[in-house]
Length: 130
Length: 338
Image (tube, rainbow over all chains, first blue to last red; front, side):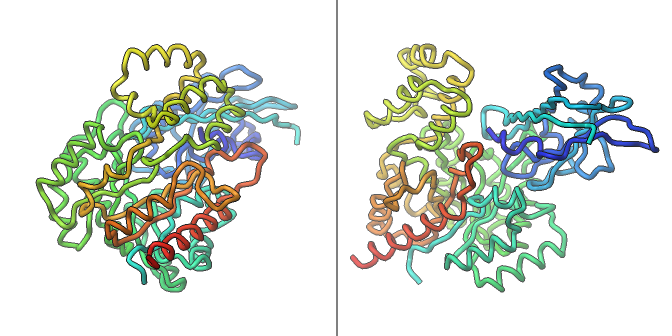
């Protein structure tokens, strides 16, 4: 459910901090039909060529300014992930990636009245040399 | 204007909005072009910053509603009782959040609030006087899978009858009156997740004999449990059986004792067929019932087939909504000519 919302095509690329490539990032819409506070985003996961990235390397942001780890998200109840506004997920890995890789993303949100979490997956092949 | 008025929930155009093909303004203009009487909105979906939108957001909203000459039918609010992972919100926290939602409804100009199914009924006595002062009616949504017979919903209905305020009622979602499971839903699950036809057929067989899967979800019989085991072999099959409980097959007469409390309808739409009918729900039957019972209010299109558009296929929200609104208008004219 909501797989079509996950991982916006063409948004995955390496990012730089102070002129150094510090990893790669990608954008996604919410796996739900409305905006919710970030504390209700219960999980997000990234795979590179089928291998799951260590959660400690992941960060999440809705404005590109304030970044949160998976654990930190659980207390962020004042910032909302708006429906229709993509969030960015960063994978912190020195030097980023090069060449072609299959990148998969999973987003899991919860809501009070649906008994199962709202989880979505999407995988694309990304050419990091571009 | 007719006693029964047309409305569209902007939920129906959520993918047009998500993909930025249409802005909120574009969608409101489309509503104007369709000549609907009212519009329904989910503030968490299309009103940025809700339940505390900026002055600019509010100004734009009112300007556009005026520009496109639209009435406001109902606002759909949620209560994030699971805001935190490690605990459920307390009653005081619930009350505070619900008052914010009522304030938001008031600022946006709405007089009818739809509270999401499973909103804790304990909240209501604390927020109802607040809503009444603003002239706002609170309604709990009776949605398929969470409607009559579900303990939390029954608790609300009992309380609603006891309080018996003209400002307290229900919104009925016609997904309760599915005579068969939406085929777009089954096709999606089959093609995208690999649900077996056997599992789909098993779930459909309940409807064939005038039942539904939902009634067994909360009260499983041993026979149902055995069926779940037999037809829920893969995670996808299991999930399909869970989601099939989101469609109920109840008689319209279930509303007989609640007519005075029904303030709003979600006219659910999964698939408009080439014949101009909804595949799962018999709106002919529903409109006859509403006319006969003298319902006065909105019937609001809520398209949900958008979730089941197969990958690589075009989104057809605008077309489906248009066809449904045209069908509603025809049905209203038909019953009013009686």
